[in-house]
Amino acid sequence: MITPKSQDLMQRILGGNDNDPLADRNIVYQQRVANRHIRNELKRHLEEYRWILILGRTGLGKTREAAELAKHLNQEGWTVLYLKLGEWLDIPAAMPREIGTDRKLLFFFDDLNQKMYASRHEISPEAEKSLAERFQVPLQERLLQALNKYEELCEPTEIRVIATARNETHSEDPGKPSPWEKLQWDKYFKLWNRFQIYELPQPEDDAIIAMLAATVGETDIKAEAEQYPELARCNDSTFRNVVENLQRLENESLPLTVKNYRHTLKDTWEKRYKKAVEKYSVSRYIYDAVDLLQQFDIPLYRFTVEATARMLAARNFWQQLWYYWQIRTAINYLISAERILEPRDGQIEAKPKQVEAGKFTLPFTRLILQLAEKHQEIQASLLSFSWNLINSKRYQDALRCLNKALTFTPDSSSLWFAKGYALDDLRRLEEAIASFDQALKIKPDYQDAWYNRGVALDDLGRLEEAIVSFDEAISIKPDYQDAWYNRGIALFNLGRLEEAIASFDQALKIKPD
Picture (tube, rainbow, N blue to C red):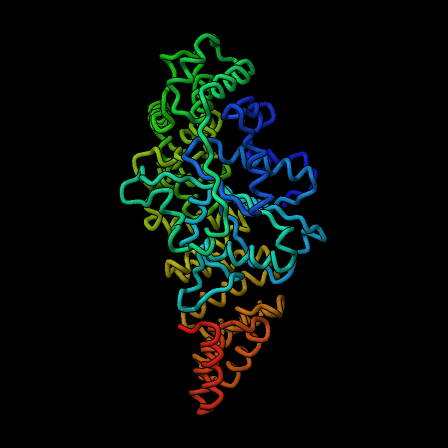
């Protein structure tokens, strides 16, 4: 949450150091097309349609344009709610206390392609979900449900939504979906129909020239302004390629010339990856570490990347000792030269192949538990990581993570619910019920804990108690179709057929098919 009139909105969304002239937020904003004011166009669209989706290919500056608009509205009194990668979007039962009484809420969703694709394996105890789908609710569904709920809690006119996404229809990684396919446009048309689409135009040559003129002088790069028009003509019509070229030239103490300039962003990323590996061969392990951490939604800190790279590189104590200093030296270079802890679109994909996460689940679990002991920053990630393990049917490993997380935050209803779910999958039903009870002590209106408690009781043959739990879930969420259905099954098994039919009728009212 970014409160109204905040002075650090751009830093929190775009990151970067204050003293880095090539950090996105420090580069002078440019009007990309002559005689058009893009921010004003976006603002008019937002006022008229309330939900806008900024589309464009990698490197066009979608995030910067969205952030500029968010900054403008934030100064006018709007609270900005920014969903960072790896964080979970809850469907609120009531207005979160943190927001207070503010009722002008601007939701900011950046890079939806990556977020949507990562969500296909996410499981949460807080989302409204179906047992038949094993509690996996894609972000496309949760996003629509959550925003609809906020519009109920406020007024639709008090909610604004800015989102960005890539629209390339080809995949750079064979066998993987394209950025556009990751959105699953046809499957989730109810969500996408809410948005007004804004196709971001690519910057004209004059905008590239103006950017070079405003930025190069803030660096130590030697350049001749007379070459700027030719550089703009050979650039791939993205702002990002300009920035990446300038960062590389400054790191390598090279002048800005047409000969030294790499024309396309893809070419820039691939050559920079190869350059890093040539300079430090262990760089490949660091890139792979970032890849693996992103797949498991673990935050990218120096200590998480460094430890994961050592795990990937070494197989025994002596190898670990040898790689320790090699990786430490290389990561210093990659943090400063490649900003590896804040990877850009296409940067990690530039390496030859993606890491197969399943091969490293067991050692990675051990590593994350060790890191959580030492670093409070990733303790909150243990919940989402545990759900990943549950989804992979590694229930014992999930329990280890959850038990560790509960030593840090024993009053978390979410952790107790996840533990109950893992125990239920292991058929340790009495223990599962005890965990759901712990969750309900902390959060009595936890409908999914009531529901799953009922399922476990039903599996034990304690049908009357199961019905009581299903009734509690339904009292909190009257349209809880799975609770109505399982309530009907329990009543049927008790021989209370008229009541069973009534429960099935309620389920069919909610879901006629």
